[in-house]
Image (cartoon, rainbow, N blue to C red; front, side):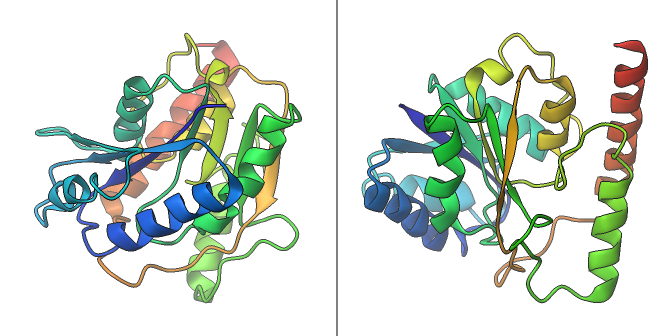
Length: 232
């Protein structure tokens, strides 16, 4: 089946060439007919230029440069809108997610065993690498905060695949950066599978996590709880 992986970027010019080599390598080695859409928010470091320069190397690569528009979730949704693939995926550009796990994440969907598959840090054999204790605790607290919304152990994951039908005619909010959580609450699906991954800290560039992102997350979960309770 036709598959498109959306990679939202902002100041990831150092990481992107490494990531794309690994992603397309995973596609090739597993016989996957995969495309990649890099959605860049007009990065000051020229990430979109780096991506454009790699289009000659990877025939399945497309680039969307968004000017005067920001936000991970809206970038993902714009990438989905660009694609007509039956299966859609998302992963971060900072090398925190292992592209080599892509075939394993896709397998349950391709076998008809799942509608959505999440690369999970919090199932057996999953993990968070060398995270400091404080970061591990804050991540767990963020997950606990949404236990009333989903039974998925790692709903904050930014690495997942889904059938297009899961989000067809579904009103998703582009606010915030946890688009998987939004889909888990509002999407149309029967079964979600979690595949273990080891999350790694970025080597190049700076984290996008700041007080504004945390505030947006709190607003997002409040809206999702409201939606779950009253349906709007």
